[in-house]
Image (cartoon, rainbow, N blue to C red; front, side, top):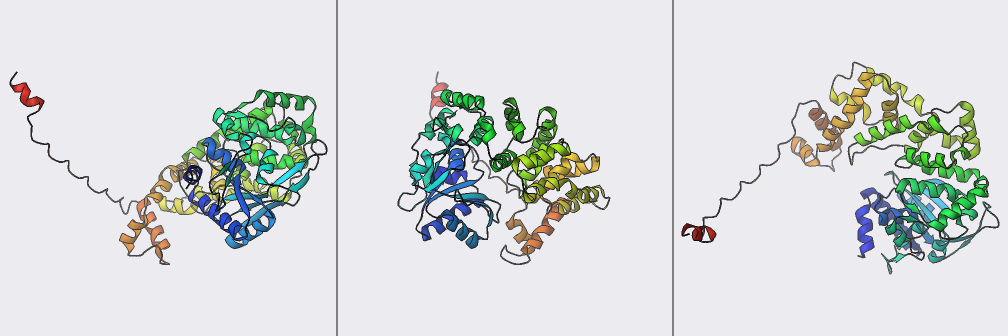
Length: 441
């Protein structure tokens, strides 16, 4: 195994590893050259958490994406027939993009590019920034070989953002916003010539050539950022948020909600099975203080579809029943509160934490994060087997596990005592070393 494959595998979650294996298997069977590229490689080499997996294939990417989706019961969220890309979501929650290695030629700034199939080297040389132009071969004969034609790995090490071409921000002006987003997220410096290109592009008003759907894609990326408020501040500083809506400025950026959301996020136990639609939740916070007219402008400027708007527009209505339930005196036991919340989508729980003014609701939500979830995670398969005689492969095991968790939460059974530590060995008998010599001095 190459060093890069070892680094990759140490950065992937078990769910991401399963997706990587599935895509590799499908590409190998179709005899297609497959590479891990883009954000996944940037995050891996930069020491950041890998959020999504980006694959590039030398060949028919759309066909491969359909094959992967069929084999793994994954959902194809979106496709770009022009650029030959597909975005998939797997049942385990992992998202990935499968793209055709391609060359893009722009007739004029912001225009629809001419797209043609290309090699992985040609594809990487046509990307936006050097740190996004790194690939890792996932092919049997060259598995683990890194392809870095623009020296992006060195720029990552220097923590520097450098455009690949002198025309990068002119060819595709959405890169103007992307540059600021990467800078805000990673804290990197912008290369002097790239910063000059940025200022020149702004003076030329290149941002007005950004297509509406490109704005939506960037808005979605912004909403999925680990800390959206930092990116919003940076974009506001350069007066770029008004591309989305004239209302996105100052206090309407809702910094208080994002700060409280960050506090709630920090309470989620590491490794807990807690799925959150961050797009819906962060978009709700971003638009919460906008007027109906300003929200309408956002929808129009990004050409956002009803399916894309519903998750955040309908989120608040979904939490009313949950708030009423958590206020109920019927939840007298910890296990009852845990059962009421464990199947609720994470974005609803977090939004209720943001909005509810009821003390009992806040207390029960805090207990869920800081007490009940950690306690439930402590219940092991071995403990359930010892108590019930069932093994994980038996149908009734899940019910036995739930009962064991409820008993632990309600104090009916205690946490198993840790095994006793072995007694320390007796001290060795005194020898004739320094002690013996000391006696005769």
